[in-house]
Image (cartoon, rainbow, N blue to C red; front, side):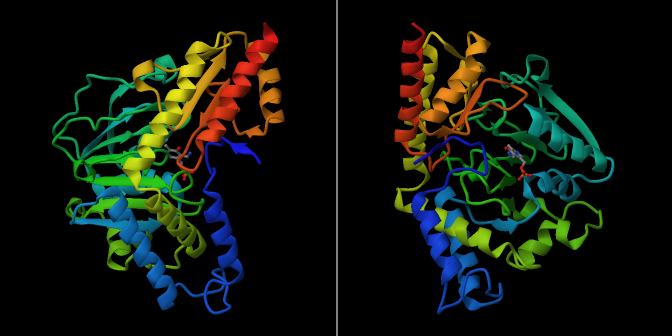
Length: 354
Ligand code: PMP
């Protein structure tokens, strides 16, 4: 058994893997999920249930549409400004890391971008505070969890303009107030399901306010009008996401998983702060619960620790090249026993060094 701390695509519950495998062999009446039409009543029921579960789990108010899209969060970087940033308008972005930078780079293809604040000079080790969001911006965009640097924004910045959020790596991990957002998007491949699916939650009234002609596949309205079936959707990815959402509901929903995620993160940060060999890389108040980044006081011990951890079945903890050291991604499906396995490895490695 492996303890999979990979950043994404990542661990999903074992029972989801088993049910997905079964559906590949026989989803309905001897037919595989891989061979059925997306226009069958059986698959329409899958999309309808997935839509219902996203709304229920995140308590999505009326007036919002849930969309099942493709192209990853990276395509959303472009779709957001195409749909919301009119000619001559400016969009405001908070720069908290690589993904935020990539998002604002795409917006610059469409219109003007104002960066309200950036922590780039500090290698994104903290979330900038006390920035001003100009009231005449078309929208404000931020990344709620910075997967690479291990920082997370738990409060929605205050503004009266539309708020757009990339929640790729913390959606479904904690309770959010959807009514504070006009558009939320997330690549599915962390807490929602497998790769190949992107979720968007769009406040209907934020659309249709600009004059641009938008190609149909890039227009949120086409996907809303066609219940996410404007073209062939990623059938298997949506089905596996549904299995995962059912699992989350059976666990007691987002509020319950948030409690577990807090416990898991607290346990690992406690060990990082206690263990003389390790130290965290981010400002304590901005520490992410999903991606926990840490390095060793003596960088020469990093390779030996990685090898030692691998011998204990711990995989996926090598840090991203922009931070180095280690990154333990602890998404919803990662059991607390895996966190304890990592903590035990850190403790026994420390003892070995003494
Ligand atoms: N935003 C965030 C916060 C991410 O973590 C990632 C991928 N890890 C992306 C965007 C890009 O997502 P995709 O690969 O689905 O385009």
